[in-house]
Amino acid sequence: MDEKIRSDILEHYQINLQDFVLIDGGWKNRLWRATDGTRDYIVKSYSTERFTKKKLQRIEEALQRQMQLKGGGVPFPHIYLYEGRAIRALDEETFYMVMDLAPGRNETAETITLSQLESLGSVCAGIHKGFAQLPNLPTNGPDDIPGLLEKHCQRQRRELSDDSPPEYRETLQKGEEILRSFSYALFDRLPKGYAHEDFTPDNLLFDDKGVTAVIDFDRNCYGYPLHDMGRAILSFALEREGLNIPKIQAFIKGYSRLHPLTWTDVADALRVTWCIEFPWWISPGCFTDALTGKAVRYRREIQWLTNHWDSIEQLTDRK
Image (tube, rainbow, N blue to C red):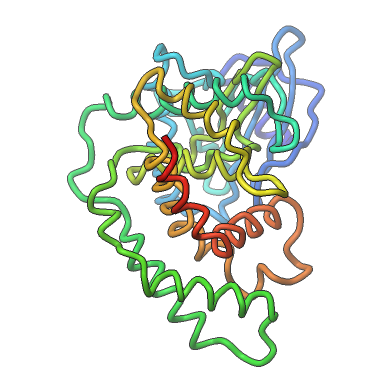
């Protein structure tokens, strides 16, 4: 850890950190695990190459919303504040935050249990319920998802060449076929509100009984809460053979403890997730060896939705 950050934490937070271990902090960010001898902490330093001051202010606002969920049954690590702010500006190049290390472990579609998925559904509903109770909801709507999707496909079609990866060309063509029959009226009837917006396995911690912590609320914003559900279902219920129905049923059972959730909602959640994430993962660069790790899985999940669109429609027939 940078000595100036360690010294600043000691001076302004009165925490004497030691035994630092650098761990994955996401693209260009840095994340350390440390201890003061009695408690374990996470220190996150934000990349000024990736984030402008305006973007950091948006993250600050997101973290402030996260902290307003406290007491609502949503487990997340305690954030240490300085002068009421989560992100500490040390100088023009150094922005960081300090929080407790959350307990638990990550799970995958291969390891997660039905009881853990039921717990995840309940926690997801708790997040949405808590966010819905926040004052001063935005007067403007979410991003124009249909417009962004259309522009992406048009741009990709214009830039398509003979050198484009065949698998990418095929997926793009199938995506365009979906768009020709897809009704964007879906977005007019869907519930809107604040959502976590990064509800992935990396940001969810479990023990044997269920969820122990939800982390990384940096991207929470006003949008479509169903995206959180769709991302969770893709991450934990999509297996080699297809969607694992008992796993989805477990998630529905947990979510319905706080708010009704139907199979039609699940189908809509997957549709929304496809619309939002298709531009993220269906591009030439995502079909090369340069794409590695978890990003490959995200691309394959959106590919699966593209190739099995009728499987989404079949979910609405379930009772």
